[in-house]
Image (cartoon, rainbow, N blue to C red; front, side, top):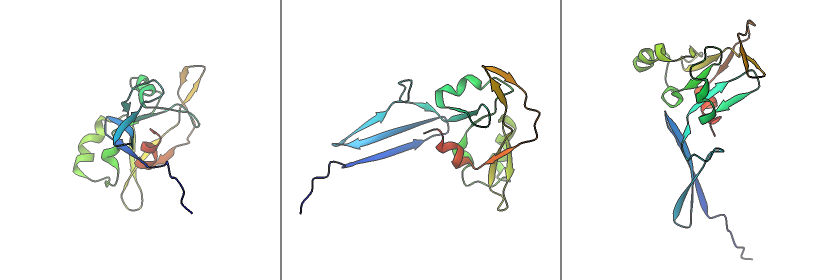
Length: 142
């Protein structure tokens, strides 16, 4: 029995250090999928507002200047690298997030969740710290 398959397409993801995009290849052309705001370029960054909430992409950029919200970017350059990599050593002093290593000396990102209630930023004095792999954080951009 012959069936018709209309699912003749491919999805491509461009994870960049600065921007990411998602495209669909169908009928011999590519269509870039816009973000919620309508932009076809999405900033490759994640802001950790508190333990449950994240802002991603273009919405995360507004937190770049605050000291209370951990924001993570440049994720692509961290994937698969070791913490003692010369390039990482050079760059990590410029990042507003901390790096730690796992048992294989691969990079993990350390996040101390902050507290934001009713758009008011507050320091989190709790001792809780979350550790994420860079790929886990990068995938949240999607």
